[in-house]
Image (cartoon, rainbow, N blue to C red):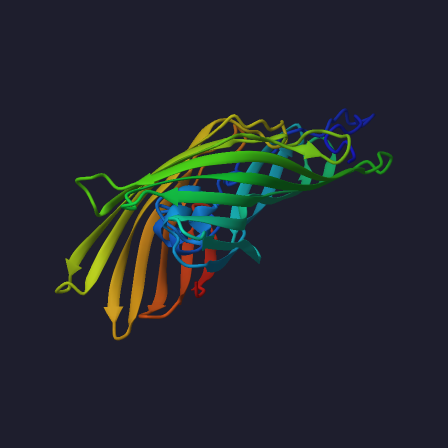
Length: 375
């Protein structure tokens, strides 16, 4: 990996390329919603669900899996385009967010074990993302053009196990996490003075790390329609493939708490409503001046109305998701979410479509599918 962020000082202009210029990029570097059913509720039920997406985030949900299940989700990954003005050493930024390309963000399989109320699961899930392009023309101090692109992607490969008690009022689980990190960055500065050669820097960094998580899920004895889930995940140190600058050396740990409440009796007993809320705390991360990290919160609230229509259930969802700025040079990310699903009665499959309107523009779109196999 080339040393991308320690460029030579321009002899005549006296400019050093700045280490940080990300002041208005909405922050989902380590708190991306991977999409699927929960995305339509602002991510509020990841800690209390038992589908393959949620079990990648709370392995205790595996204790309630009674059929082999496969699931996948895809979503548009956000991109940001930033116009820069001012001096290179103190850029002024104006950022707009776009929906980005549609990518696979989750693929999972879970299955019960024989003779016990337990199951195992394996999953691939995208948990962090940034794709920002900064560009400007005719900046101060003799800079003709400035271009900077940075992309950070964090994937988790997880192997989990969960087990519930005899009454299925309590479940616990743990998982092994292999983190895959990819960072691509390119920077080019062209000066107005043709005697000063353009300055370029490029880095392509891949790394891996290993971590773990432990989760619980339970229903309070006096509240059988309520489910509470919590998870604690360790920080993950990333080992790079070669020498160079550490742009994002430690993926933060995550502590999360979620509550879901199901209420029946709507429309003469045919329909029901699910309410959910979740709070997450990201801690122990270590970044760099380029990908600045600090402890921060994220979370969401939402509801799902389960409407019975003919021989199918039509879930209708809405929610709100927020991610606090996880670094001094990022901004918070928040927006409303909504979605709809289709679940035929007595069928083993379901499909969900979710949307999220971001605070700086652009709409995220997710499509997910799940299928329960025979035992």
